[in-house]
Length: 440
Image (tube, rainbow, N blue to C red; front, top):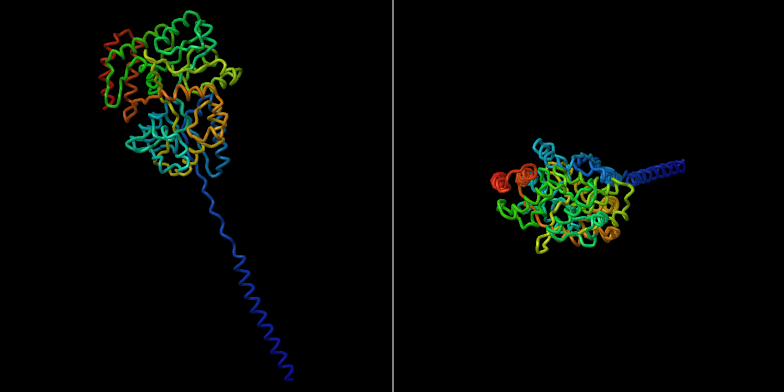
């Protein structure tokens, strides 16, 4: 009996010990099998992007490809493209900002950056962009859109217009395609010769004479070729002998049919694609636009047809070019600035954008590393000529908070020059007063 009792006690101890071990094992198992915390997923965001390249035939498909690839690489970011014609960009952005409906990011010209910064609409770029990206940008481009000591523009595609000449048309006109005109006087003489010898449907040269800020940018190098500097900071000096000589020249080239009045410079591009434009005043990307407009023209044919020279200069051979770089800006009211920065840096410097947009369109890249990563960029003779002959001659335009109103007033005066027979002295005298008022 005693033995049976001891056996029962021993059995109970074994059971208790087993249960204790089981409980410990279960706790250990529960600790080990505690579910891991899931990595925090990035919330999907949509950013709005206002731009003009989505409206233009030569760039529309290429930029859509870049945006599509960005969205694949960044599935949490959706880009809502808002196409706006280039001539309406500043006006539309001003309306959007004033109406508290600014986009997240926009494509702009350098003068637009300053105007929008003066409105307090933009986010400074120094804290927005990554350090590596800023270090890779050409510093002169990054500093181009500084307002009151703060940088607001993101350089995207340097695109200042250069002087391109159709070698085949020059030869047909009896001009030497190996010696394009070097001064504004040689240029005028070449236009006169070409007008006599070329078919009537050939246009001498591309010049924007519209009442727009772009019009001033387009005409600025030609004014400088006559020695005129009508606006220099706060100094406005329009009623001068140099400006009179320029205005008389402008009236003459329009009256003689060397260029077409009232045309936006983009309206001359189809003529270039049709072989009907002798001298083009356009960006290094003209090749990409022309080959898009006329698929029979290959890159090789374009390079064989067109050459690049410094813009016609002064009597002593000094040349001037004006900036027309494509910039990006981030708006202060955007709630998705991190996504904006990521998209901006992708547009400017991703291998995909460089290979599928910057290079095929013909832009000069904004970053120093681009040529090493995409060597074919440096193999383009048109672009190489721009880097050598145009970029070093770029001079600033009179940017400032009132640049738009000043440029508009100025170009209204130039429009009066080409559409009326009023005395040049009278037009310039009145223009002096109007520009002074617009600058206040």
